[in-house]
Length: 401
Image (cartoon, rainbow, N blue to C red; front, top):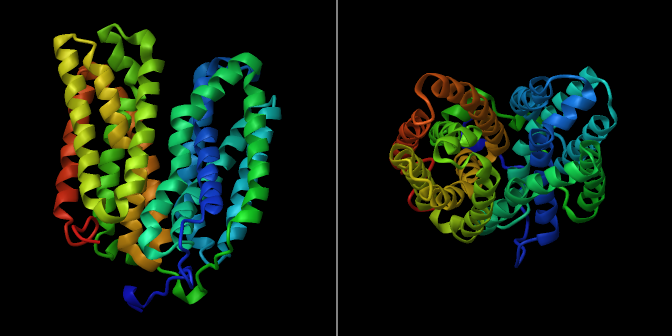
């Protein structure tokens, strides 16, 4: 059976006149819970390590295990559950977050806490692959880009507002309360999804494509290549942003720089939502270009020992990165067509591998080349991303949609 013969499982029978805001905001909140669950330990490591009786590096493995779970789960679980009704799967995934965060909040046992974090990662790998396809399936074709922008906005809100607020709450009331609150939000979200999100059927058993067939679909490999290069470049800078700021005398201002980046990212995803349905190619090239400009400004600042350009770079960085996940997920879904869910799982895996590889490669660069080597390495990766995106004019990032 050819790719064109695969049937899309979830096309709305009659397009709604406007976006289904309650349903899309529920999906966005699911993304918020996912990213908050992933990133919260980074802001509470000292208290978390003290409570669990381990070093901060030991507590930091809670982030590593979450990422490992996401990488391990995205492709196989998405393929195995392709025929499940989408709403049931969504409810189970959000319920999994409620349970994992409740165990994390209550556990005084380090192995149990790490097991809960790994389980949360498994759920996250499945949920990220599910969200984009779900948002696209409940709107008219001409609304798909905007719907995905709304559904993916929760992760940007979590990055820019949620994680700093959660860190402050943890400092005032304890890290366990913060995880308990995330569990409570997930429980409430289960009810919201049950009431507001329409049911969507899964794929029939004989319609399930293989990974090899999905990778052969024109444009899919190009989008995955751009994703890998872009995410690796971004995270080489983001993971080691404190090390980049230290030589400029801004070591104590990391939180301010990241806040500027996060708020700018909100503007980036708003612009993406408004323009993506007509200008996906231009927006993708602009995102790569803006991140390349960011790396160039930071490299120049380090050479000249000038601090002030960094805040401008943070604004540009946020504008480029804010809508990137929506752009790349839309591109791979458009290219894969009926095989969008499995293609999304491949993209989620590329994204998480990029995060893990950036931590490793960035550490080596920092140790052997110093902070100045980081932006130049990111710039080389972004040049590759730009070249691949520019070449994928017919499939992947077409000029006309």
